[in-house]
Image (cartoon, rainbow, N blue to C red; front, top):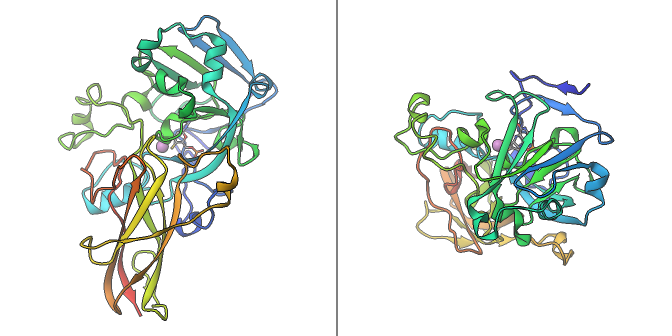
Length: 374
Ligand SMILES: Nc1nc2c(c(=O)[nH]1)N[C@H]1C(S)=C(S)[C@@H](COP(=O)(O)O)O[C@H]1N2
Ligand SMILES: [Mo]
């Protein structure tokens, strides 16, 4: 029998303080946890992943089967679509959902076989020119969730099959087997795509013509238009609004924290630090700017080079980027700083996106406000 921790009513959801989060390029421990149900403790010796649907051969893969395929490493940020919801809620209008601050993201080294290799082994029966309208659905049947009997998600088959999209079935996180709360013994990792699609405790992969029928694909994790301002109205939009896939370019200021007292350095500057995230497949982040005058003028931040740059075969396209800047500020109260990221694809963070009921994909300028400079 599978042991479960936490309950459907009270799943484990937590984030570290952002100051702590940005202290290392790789999030080694205490990353965020996001669960729609309890955490199952699975046995890697008996666990199997089934491959079904529009494939020539149905497969039932054990963990040793997955380990014996070529292993691929990806350094990628895993981010909940609800990251920064607190800012949308406080800046724009009340939204529904967990009150995430800026810490529902972590940057880790993931390792496992490519989903592509598993699908090739199984034999995809959908012709190549239909791959962008077909889907690969992921399912975990281990526990009921808050809004559905199981957890599921899907991504485009085209993305899954493209080698450079780096979608993997992760067996390891930061060179160790996944921890139970992060999906042991196997989870999907979908770089650039909202965390909701990186299904943990993966039981089944299905190649199909439709998206996953699961609640979290069909109803939740959608950027509804502002007219959908209550749950009743949202229902009229669910079938018309696409499920979130790629996450938008983003950045936050972690230090100094809102409402903190900051001391000027001898040069009359304060040190500012944060993280930045590329949009979808358009990484890496190539520029972060900081403004001390409400966005009239901007100065380039320094993008912090990380040791992992030395791993030649591992791309930083999907990783977050830690940054720091020295910004001139006058002494006084009510000071405000802003940050703005640009990625390689040319996506630039906007001042403030439109409000949406679920408060997802918030990517307004990073901000640190009500600072007292002494
Ligand atoms: N089986 C299952 N997979 C899941 C979830 C879940 O509740 N159950 N939550 C999803 C969401 S919404 C996010 S943001 C990430 C969180 O991953 P983490 O808990 O490892 O941080 O897992 C995704 N995969
Ligand atoms: Mo999420």
